[in-house]
Length: 467
Ligand code: 6PG
Image (cartoon, rainbow, N blue to C red):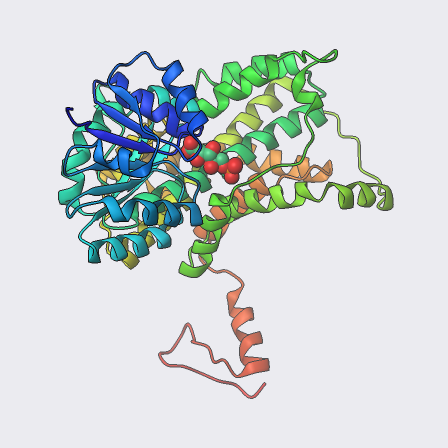
């Protein structure tokens, strides 16, 4: 029997759709899933003769041509290690095992080393785009040996999303680089979603807008600078009627956010590296805060404070100010994510091409957006750009929008509306551009209680004072 070109192991939503996508692009695929029902289901759904099901690991591995190319689409964590252990007895030197899940990049670095000792090539491949992306073209972030990447590049390029005919897939860097970049993508995704939610929160609570009105506003915003997948789906969400009761579905959904950990990892890593990504981290914290609904209900009853009822004179103007505040905050969130990648690139010696990364984010992935073209342009102009907000385009926009941004943040705070994303973004902007922060005092405090020493502005050296 002729051998198959690619194997996909793990047929949950992402794995199943990726297998169909690979088959659709003409590659002969073998699939395997621990429980055979999923395999049967997929075979029933598939119209491709060259997508075949296998029912044990050995049959799966044996069905593949050498060097074997196996994409694991299993849950991050132990299931990845377990699957590797199951595969190992049947693999041969030179085979390629790819992890297409949201694995933590340090696990990917470890697996890369472990499998190298067994002469198996391991690639950590970030894949973004959810179910729809997996089926019709995701953004793909492969990390591992460049020579191994070259062997799988044709498959990855052909199944990826395309922007202007260019694949949304590029070699990211050695070992864990692909999963690192996917992790930061998700951190940015958290911030982006949080900022959109805050805009909604202000519009809903201060202007008392209804879902159909919100649908219209977001649809309009999607025509301009904010054009993006997340704004588009937000507009769609507001149009969705409840099919179980009267009204709109968004109004019936419990305000408790879930999370699977990639945003948290981004924040943890940023703390380890000493890179400020406050807007991303606030987005994680806000999900945590939302999750203690019981406590929040108690607090709501316990804390009775007077909040001024603020009347907005010119609604259209205020809506435009919110749009500007959202765009400016979004720029800061992306600047934070890209700063983290810049630092990681140095620390792990990955030589990340931030311009190429912003290019592949333009299609397929959850944060795909028109404005990624601006980020791409910024890095094309200066591949060593220290921070995105120093680029001419972003500098100009932030300068132009800052008044509205400040107005929105202060009015929302006055009205008692929690806006951790917006306010952290503007504080990041202000903190970053401020010549003298109050850390002179902080250094004095540290020296006062702990003799931690300080430096002076007017002379060289390290000083300690007996306060
Ligand atoms: C993507 C998404 C994907 C997943 C998130 C959801 O790029 O396709 O980011 O990876 O939907 O991990 O994450 P939370 O459950 O943590 O929101």
